[in-house]
Length: 132
Image (cartoon, rainbow, N blue to C red; front, side, top):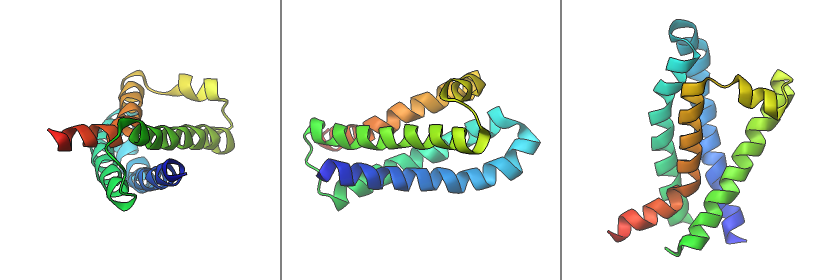
């Protein structure tokens, strides 16, 4: 139950940061720089948001440094992120999951996938970093 609550809050924090950054990226950066460059500029800021949110979740829920507990938190958050992304693609853009994935830029889309993996693993990574 702790992993579900922590994972949900982790998702909300990171999704909220992405939403706020998107409010700057879409109207201001995309028209001037293009979607690829705008998304790539946003990526480091999202990584910082992921690190900060994961650290907060670890402290807030006093997560043990056992990898499986922290991995469960990351997997819950990742599942919610994927559901949210695909739901918004369907509801706002009228795209199926396959169409949405196919429409992603190959460069920024790959960077986004790497960021998603980092998002899922960050609670575990922070346990390893703090032990070193």
